[in-house]
Image 1 (cartoon, helix red, strand yellow):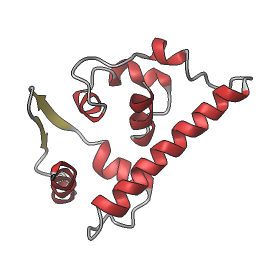
Image 2 (spheres, one colour):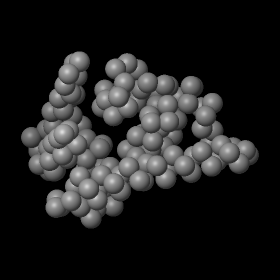
Image 3 (cartoon, one colour):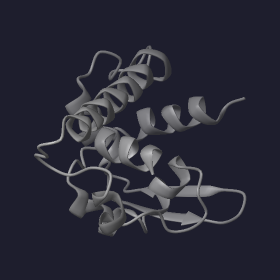
Image 4 (cartoon, one colour):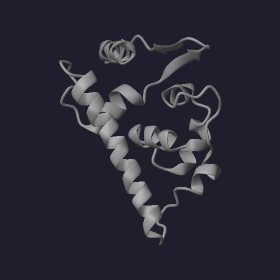
Length: 135
């Protein structure tokens, strides 16, 4: 569940309500290395309440944000080096590489992401996928 929340925050989905749709998302499931539906907002709410008076709950939210930032920063610094997005801010990475409209198909061995032919960053997206999946 922590991995799911970190990936969601990294993609800009900070509200727990977003998980009701994201828990069926095949890309998020793949990122979390799961083959089935992930936790919904009612399950995650028990771990991550907004504006809680409890110190630990708020610290947990800060830790999720820090982990999500570290994930994006590492991707930018290592996987995207030498590309037009190598110096992009996290917000730009989200909009240009993570929040894309695509057709996703998944089976037991592969995940296929079909981007629109008009997607402006499809070459960078392909390079990102290649570098992430290369041994």
